[in-house]
Structure formats: C-alpha cells, structure tokens
Amino acid sequence: MKFGAHISTAKPFSDSIIRAEELGCDCMQIFANPPQRWNPATLPEAEIKRFRELNAEAKIGPIIIHSIYLINLASENPFYYESSIKSLIDDMKKAHAIGALGVNSHMGSTKGREFNEVLVKITLAIKNILMATEGGPDFIIENSAGAGNIIGDTIEEIAKIIQSVNSPRVKVLIDTAHAFESGYDLKTKEGLEKFIAEFDKEIGLDKLVGFHLNDSKTALDSKRDRHADIGAGDIGLDAFRRLVNHPKLKDKFGILETPQDQISWSDQLKLLREL
Image (cartoon, rainbow, N blue to C red; front, side, top):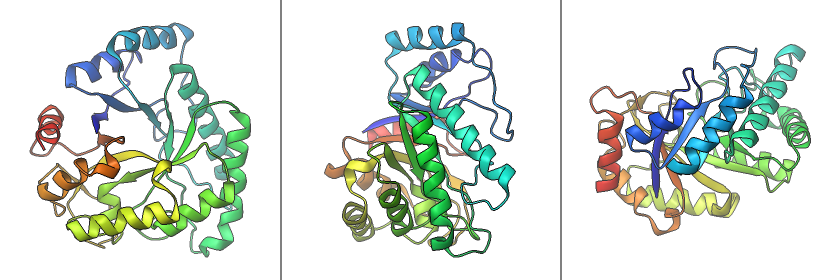
C-alpha cells in the first residue's frame, strides 16, 4: 500500500510536489480550488507545466483532488445544485491537466428527503460531470460519517449511486474514520473482514481506489466526524495494522487527513510503513 497526505497548494501551486517529497509521500491529495468558495481559482499553464515536470522526477502518485466543501448534488436550490456541478467539472478538468487520478467528493445532503427521492438528481449531476469531461479522470465518491442527512454513509447508498450512473469512471474512496463513525466496526478483525466482503459484494473492490487513513475521536456509530491521529483514537493501531497489510487491499493507497494533534504526518507515515 502506498501512503501520503493532504498537501497544501499555497502559491505557487506546483510547490505541492516539493512539499509532498519533503514529507515523504508516495501519493497525495490536494485542493485545486479554495474549499470554502464557489469561485474557482485560476491555474496558470506555466504552473501546470512545472507541476508535471516536477512530478516527472518525484513520481508522486496517484494524485487526487479533493472537491470544495460546499458540494451538494442533491440540492433543491438551483444555484447550489448548478454551482456544485460547475465546481466539480472545473476540478475534473484540472485533475486531467495535472495528470491526477481523479476528483474525490462527498455527495451532499438530502435535507430531510428520502435517499431514493434525491438519487435521480445525484445521478443526473454525475452524468453531466462525466459528459463535460469525456476521456478525463475518475469521479471518486467518498463515504460520509452519517451525521444528519448526509448522503453516502452506507455501502448500500454508494452502491445505488454507482449502479444508477453506470460508468466505469465512477470509483470510491473510503475514509476509515467516517466508516467507523457510521457504524462499520473496522476496529476488529471480524469487522474489517465483514466490511471488505460487503463492499466487494455490493460495489466491487475494483472500484475502490484507496483510503483516507484517519483514526476517530468519536465512538463506533457515533455519527460524528472527528479525525484523530493514527493509533490515537477509537479505531486503534492494531486495526490499521490489519488494514494496511490486508492482501485484498495491497494495491490501494492511503492518504492522511489526521489533525496532527500528537504525531506529525511525517511520523505517521513512518508509523504506517512500520506497520
């Protein structure tokens, strides 16, 4: 399993490759746009060229772009719905330009409606995004922690979206903290095996690109999204040892999004490799 972290793209954008190298990343995740704003950032051609040139030497990969935080592909508000689609298209085009694997995003919130009511809107949105970026990178769905009306906290919901869109470019990334917080007991050997078996049956492990490797500050099935450093939360070090060594997951990657409350990312990367 390859390991990396979420790397800053503070200007100049292309320096993110240098930062990832210095941290000891095999792979990385970045923002291509300010996460709390609808307006996309300009990514100059010179920066794209330098990014690719630097990475031709560094060989950091895969690279994924994380979408902005405002995305809701189920919104009844036309502005938020259309803006979400436009933002994801922009991210997908930037991912293609820099040679990234794809764009990772949450789906948004039902705002109290039933999942089946909003599935059509989500499906249409993803199909539009894929059509606008034909031949481009993967669209990667991330699971959620299950708080409130947030979409995608279960394997079943994610499977329904994938089946409805029906495109080989739709993939999945699993956040370990979110999975644990939404009720999947990754802490135990039996729980991990059950999760892998269910995922493979409902979605297929070929659709799983990798993980956000995060421990959890909150308990199993808490429905509260709180990341902890690896080994410093309720999931625990033994669980991560089993996950990163699992034979069915050896071709996946793991990205740190931990808070570095107690352990730096460089030390957490070392810890994961020691496991």
